[in-house]
Image (cartoon, rainbow, N blue to C red; front, side, top):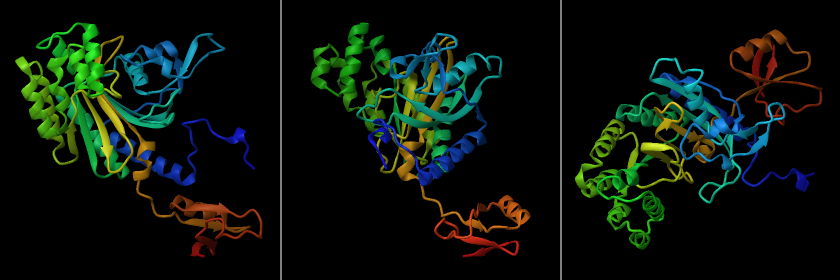
Amino acid sequence: MTTTDDLLPEGLADNLPAQSALLTHAMRAALGAMDAHGYDRVSPPLIEFEKSLGSRMDGLQTRAMFRFVDPASLRTLALRSDITPQIGRIAATALADSPRPLRLCYAGEVARIAADQLDPVRQRLQVGAELIGADSVAAASEVVLTAIEALEAVGIEQISVDFTLPDLVTTLASGPFPLDEDQADAVRRELDSKDAGGLKAVGGEAFLPLIHAAGPFDEALAKLRAIDAGGALASRIEGLEQVAAAIGDRARMTLDPTERHGFEYQSWFGFTLYAGNARGALGRGGTYLIRGTDEPATGFSIYLGQALPLLPAGEPRAMLYLPLGHDRQAAARLRSEGWRTLAALSDDEDPRTLGCTHRLAAGAATPL
């Protein structure tokens, strides 16, 4: 019997056995791909002091996190909404003396107070990697390729990478298209909505061509190059070309240089991962600075729940039924060989109904 008390809050859902098995397999595969490239796994706690979580990355808002008072310290704690700031804390503290560049990866659950229209989920499984100590073109290329390989290891096909330049308006506003900070903020908002009239109204007419500098990578980059008065973006354009050359035909590439959604703390380079018919982005990444040490870093995060509809269903696993009084040594040997076993609790069980495919007989697995 289900009552209203059994219903889950909006944006939260159970993962039942089939979904959990897919996600677990995907998580292991993604972490394995990162490990193969030298990324060591760390596991930060689910909750931390609010001040710590909110102080490592620009633009990260603790008001989006669940917060509560720690009865032990009487300080405010927060439930993490993103693991990346925790990696920044670890790199700046416990691993401050480790050689750079430092490669770390992670996997864990994150939660946020409210969903948005683009992503209604409030709890997600986040896996990712961070390259601490470098935000160069070489670092960006490695991180994008590692993200693609992680998705490929999971079984995702038809991968797309959409590049952006998170600090584009800041760079142009301090150079060829001068704006004060208030005007620059207004221009960013109008570019977010691709509103040509709004751009003119806030004094951002010079930024109008950026609205159309989006689409397939080569075409969009050519438009961006034509806009680049005075060469203020020359190094960024060259960097994008080098990253794209490293990717080659591994993924479809697009460019939207003014895209800011999901890039609260990235610096010169950002990218969004898409695939197939998945609803929304599978992940994001880019370059950033770790506040407190101002150490550069490059990384990515993938949200495997978003990829769930694309994950290939594995073959049903065989299950070995162990009747009452079975040979325990034989059962242990078969488990060590990879069999899943299910032990009988009574004589009236139906092994097939319980999902078993084989029965232990004479020390061997016999098909039912």
